[in-house]
Length: 302
Image (cartoon, rainbow, N blue to C red; front, side, top):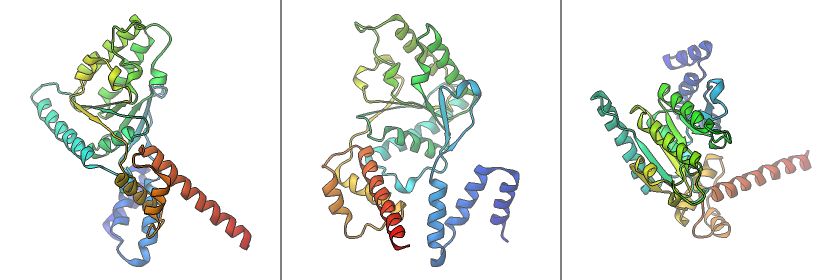
C-alpha cells in the first residue's frame, strides 16, 4: 500500500468525504494501464456526476444554495476564447484584491454576466468559482423577495452576513429581480429601498468575496448598481463550431464514440446559432433514447 492509498483510507475512516473524493481523483488520474481505462473513466464520471451541497444554517436554506464545485465537470465544459479572457481577468482581479486587503483597502471583485436565457451564464459563474477555489453560493431571489414591507432588505442582509463569514462566489442569478432601474413609472418606494440596500451591502463586503450577477435584462438594471460590477461580459449564443465542440465533449464524457456521425447529427438538429441549454437538452435526449433502446433490446433478447 502506498501513501496515497493510506491517505484515502484515512479520509474515509475520518468521515471526510470531500477529501476522500479528492484523493480518489488523484489516484484515478494516475492510472495509465489499458485494462484500467474503462474503470478510470467510469469512476471519474461518478465523481463529477453532481455537485456536493454545503450545509447551510437553517435560517438561510430558504434563500441560498451552496455548492462545493471542486469537482466541476471541466471535461464537458466549453470555454470559448472570449470567456477565457473574462475568467483570466477575474482571477487577476482576485489576486489584486488580496494585495489591497493587506493594505486595508476595500475592493470587491464583481462580475456582471448578461445575455439571453439558456446561454450558460450560471455555468460560467460556477466555473469561475471552480477556478477561484471558492464555494459557489447561489441566491434564490424568488425567496429573498418578500411581499411584506421591509422583509426583503432583512433577507438581503442575511445573505451578505453569510458571505462575510464564509468567503465564496456569491451569485445573484437574474439580479434584475431586485436591481431594476429606479424612478420608473411603475416604481414603488420599496423597490428603491431594496436596490439601495443591495448596493450598500456590496460596498461593505470584504475583498475575499467574489460577486457575480447574471441577467437577461441588462438594459433595465439600475446604472448605479451596474457601476459596482467593473467586469461586464455578454454571454452570446453558441456558434456552429461551439455547438459541435460542446456536443463532442458531452458525448465523450458519457462514453459515446462520435466518429463519423456527429457533424451530420449537429447539422440536422441545430441551426447556426443556439443557446447552450438547447444543445445540452438535445444531447441528453439522444443519450436517453440510446439507453432506452439498450434496455428494450435486452428485454427482447432475454
